[in-house]
Image 1 (cartoon, one colour):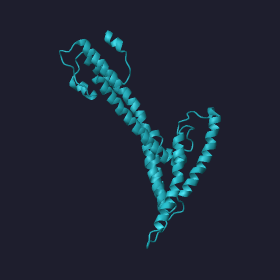
Image 2 (cartoon, helix red, strand yellow):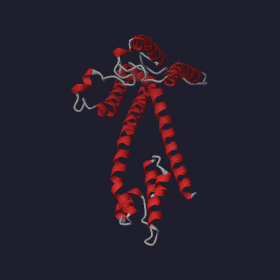
Image 3 (cartoon, helix red, strand yellow):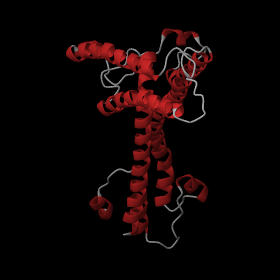
Image 4 (cartoon, one colour):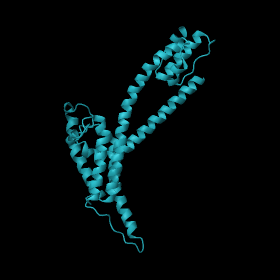
Length: 263
């Protein structure tokens, strides 16, 4: 009973962690989608999910309205002089650009959906912009996604805001979008790393589990797995069953209970 409760608690914690990561990734995808459409013009047909596309479109419709509402409120303050932020382009211009990109990419993706042989992998985000290859480590896939592209968006927003090409509100959004882009790409890398790390952990824990069954494992060998040794006078069959159960809990894979009891 205690083993089932501990296993259930571990599964609940893992489920909570995965749900939190999925939520953060979804929010980051919604915010960064307009920027990604610019810096990754060859993304696949399933790179952006339908909910992310819908929520990003709603966001781009709400931002100009919120900006206009804020400007109206500032103008209503008595004895106050509200000066609109300097800049050639505001949220409304960004919204127009976003939906223009949606139209262009929509036609491109529709052609790929009709002719699936044109696409190697539908969830691939596409190659980076060509000039990234000229930067040191620019040919590294994850370094470009996590470091170079967000930094490019961040510094481009800073320069455009300083030159009064974009207004401060739009510049703040682009700065935030750069951070969400870096976080989204880091989560993608983390998922890949986690799969490989779990496989290596299971491989490295196998010798220690074998020595635990024989009651020969030391505390140094069991410490990385947060396990303790069995009492010396425990029955060998019980020790073997408990060790197999712990191995199953660590690996999160089903095992044959009848075969274990038969041994």
